[in-house]
Amino acid sequence: MSRTVVLAYSGGLDTSVCVRWLADRGYRVIAFMANVGQGEPSAIAVKRAKAAGASRVIVRDLRREFVADFVWPALKANAVYEGKYLLATALSRPLIAKHLVAVAHEMKAHAVAHGCTGKGNDQVRFEVTARILDPRLAIIAPVREWQFRSRDEEIEYALRHRIPIDVSKRSPYSIDQNLWGTSIEAGALEDPWVEPLADTYRSIRSAERAASRPGYVTIGFSRGVPTALNGTRCEAVTLVERLNALGALHGVGRSDMIESRVVGIKSREVYEAPAATILFEAHQELERLILDRELLRFKQGIAAKYAELVYSGLWFTPLKAVLDACVEETQRRVSGTVRLKLFKGSCRVVGRASPHSLYRERLATYSAKDQFDQRAAEGFIKLFGLPYEGRGARGEGRGE
Ligand code: ARG
Image (cartoon, rainbow, N blue to C red; front, side, top):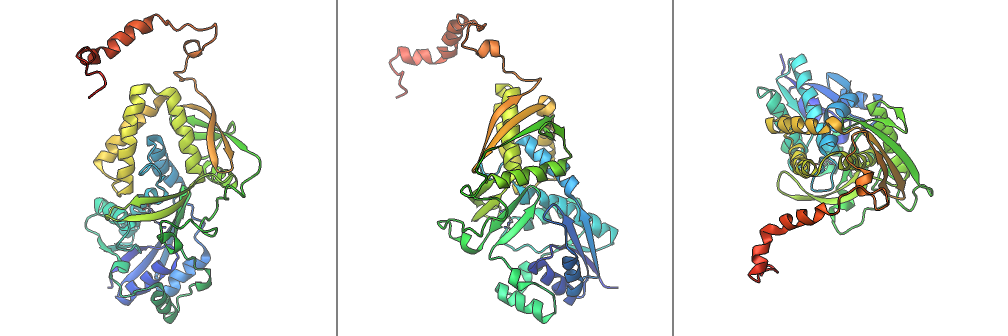
């Protein structure tokens, strides 16, 4: 009996060629397609996998699980990698790997495979996750092994093996897409000095072509999770889809960055993440209203660590579980409403309200309603500055 491998299949050129390559090596290939909101896996992609030599194609809709179990925890943590990347691709990988392993178990496969290159982060995320979940499964990464030196050679191989690929539709970029965002790299973007061309961005309008009037949106949060749009409860996947459409219309959510990959190189990536951008702004602002100063500061440290773990593929690890438990505790009162204004690429919070707000108008006001005891400030400042007074007395006050 031939050995079985389950391949994470996207429907693109690389993974289609992977199917054939594995089949040529005597494997029974099962193509696994995860729908994480990149667009419904099409009948064409399923046919393509079969034509390439897959004995079965298994499609799973993972959108709800993606948002509930991967995106919302990252949002609650305010996880942003190197201050810019909202982690769309990185968050989807442990989920896809989890199901890849589950399908391998169901199919009694001895191996899993993916179509990642040997230079990227995704190979790390897939493989670390698969090894955590089942170290007995073998892992095959055809793209790291095969002999093709260019895309043209790959295309030639595909055509020779009658794999129905659509060469005309090929984009000059490498694109990864899901509900939480789109990652675009390679092609003209490889020169970090070159501004992304008009054909780079997939969905978000440029600021110049964005809607000419501002748009407003109100988001309701319950324990750190967005649950309502404009006053109406909204299911998670739909909520993200609606904010993606709204942000795209107003030019919100584009970014262009150099990032530090796990494998040690710097790379240039362009991202589109309208819903993620809007929700991060809103969530962070709600926390500023509700969490006390010490907790806010401490949580910033957690956010940075959380993002690093997600980026490096360490989702299913003990430290990540500890951070989740900690973040969860911080979100107990993060319920309320945030109002944002979107206009020509900008996304600004213009209003916030919560039953757990720490903002007390009678203390903050400069009007006659003021109840702040200003005399108490005098003693407070004396003691607050006391540790530094000795140096002042010795004439070292300016810090020399
Ligand atoms: N740099 C991003 C990450 O490591 C995206 C990787 C995939 N990008 C792509 N354009 N195919 O998460």
